[in-house]
Image (cartoon, rainbow, N blue to C red):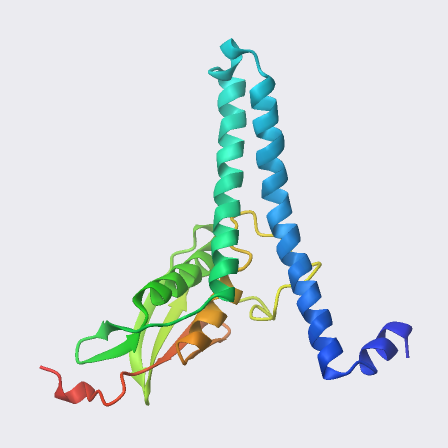
Length: 206
């Protein structure tokens, strides 16, 4: 047995959780540091250009790099903070004629946006379908199929995402739990399950 295996095997639940959390925060720091560094050095280079060159091809290229990096950084920060701060107040969302779910509209939209971003990587067409399954509404999102371990907590060594959506699935999982549901995967799609409105009878709606 290697030292690494021995070390993991002797950890208590608290130590293992702290180590996993630390590895996740390492991934977050890496994802944020890359676009932040790009934005900083491209802005610095742009500031050093002579005034007449800033409006030229080189200046436009540097400005574009800076803006793309800042946009990626904004998405990462929004996903991270939303995953950390979840208070669902509740708004009715119509999913299919005849029934509704009672959920936070803003969080629901962010979750769907995150799933579309992940399933649509590489310009793959994305298909959404929502239907009642028992006491829940299941939103199925199909496009780029989930990778093995797609719902595992990101950690140091996890591949970086150049679009800024490296925390999207983590954010969607946290949103799903906050709304009383869950996120799972099949070999071909993502499944966001949310509870129906309490006391709502889909057959009784007019």
